[in-house]
Length: 420
View 1 (spheres, one colour):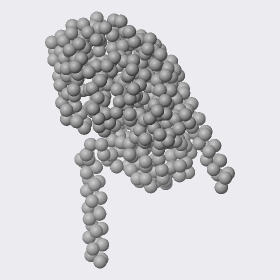
View 2 (tube, rainbow, N blue to C red):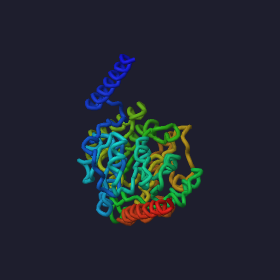
View 3 (cartoon, rainbow, N blue to C red):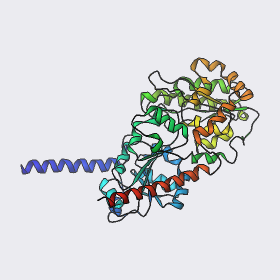
View 4 (cartoon, rainbow, N blue to C red):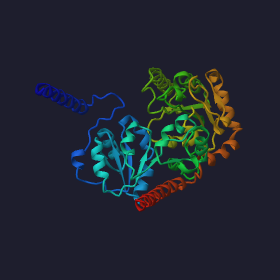
């Protein structure tokens, strides 16, 4: 028996050593956190913060938290905050790209130790990663789902929202979306409307286009292929190259292509289409450098809005965040047959573009930008989807909602202590 035990121990040691070596060499499969934490350094300490942002994912998901940097940095000035990362590569990027404090935790025991005795009362989450359950186990914190966009995708009403104490949403549209689609969740009490602080990047008057050219600028911003069949809303593989060719072929149009950061990570067809659209843009630039066609991958999507006259996108947060510009919007109608599509006010208003409509895309875009027959309808949707979009209004509501959540949770914890 002793020999058997020694052999089992040796196998565990080999697996542990091999796992560390794989992580150190960066040989992990895509989507897997490297698990290289600062646990030894953190032992015996507590988190000097009132709020944490939990982000356990590897670097390919960084786009989900990047859009929150400004809001988190502003919150940190009122409510001391630290980011708890679960991947050392992600932590390095967070430290390089923001002023936020970051710790990397690989083991649940370490997280338990640094939270015990701390003043942390608020945990914020920007996605529904399975890693989140590491933090969700702590009842001394109020757990708030933020996500990384508000849209008419069904993921916006995922049953996973029930894992959180509160859900911060952009506007009343999200509250109504939950009420219509998710049983056993009291949207009126669990949802807090805070707007979209990210839209401050649009400036004082988002309806004013600050970059002008002689051509009508078309921003094509497709979503990715989706993690699941029910959310396969992307147009890139079935529409992207044909749309790009149609736009660059028209002397009156300029194309800005904004690919989703995850395009092609799951589907080879999307990866191929992304390369093809980029090649179409590159060829158009080589043929006519003055036309201004370009691929935009840097910065936040909202910052690109100032360059465009019209947006062509899929069912995604891009459509929602475009609304305050009051400029024309076209939403594709190419979702996979198995995808779940709901009738929503925004989709009812926006003209839809299917594969069969590509040959007429130039005429459609010309009509929408010249006449914009749905402008008043979209204007009425801005407050419904996003609330007050005046610069700073959403950020103020977000910070206030975080402070309120902490106060409410401390009052509830005190109530529970008094009932013991």
